[in-house]
Image (cartoon, rainbow, N blue to C red; front, top):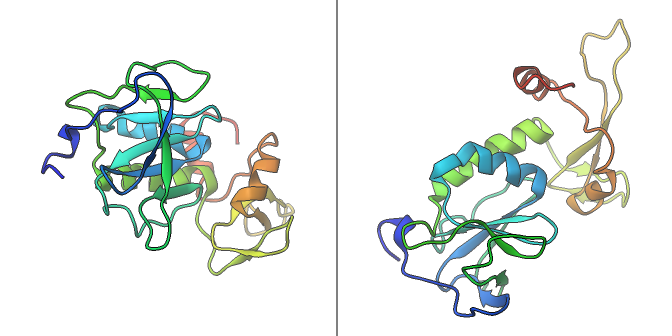
Length: 204
């Protein structure tokens, strides 16, 4: 891989349709759910490399192979080559720049391809905290499947009474799969995310 991650000499081989290409060959891919991905994209600004968006509004950044394998963030997955199986990413032709199907949300070009993994981590980590608050200690049970999850996403918060010392009471969590069922509900605010809402002049 080149020393400058923005200048990898690679272009999608298919000019007519989306093609499944193996992660871990030219690049690894970092997949982020829309809530986290959109915020991270705004935080990165011009420092983002090329980004693919699929029909579900999920975002995919291309990063240097092996640069993100140890990441652990809620609603974020790293697509890379595994020892016992191959992982593929649907890559659209370079000239597909509009939806609603899979397209390049941030255009791919000779000087804009891979994203610096460290900067992407920082943006995604900040987006994770802003969207879901602090990660609770230990594994949590999903309120739908009742199985423990290492990626607990708050889906409901029981507010404390007027005499409570805390502005937020008990939180209810879901695993990433079942958290999507609560997407249309008002997102709960935690102690750490409430100041972010105030800063952005958004309702809590």
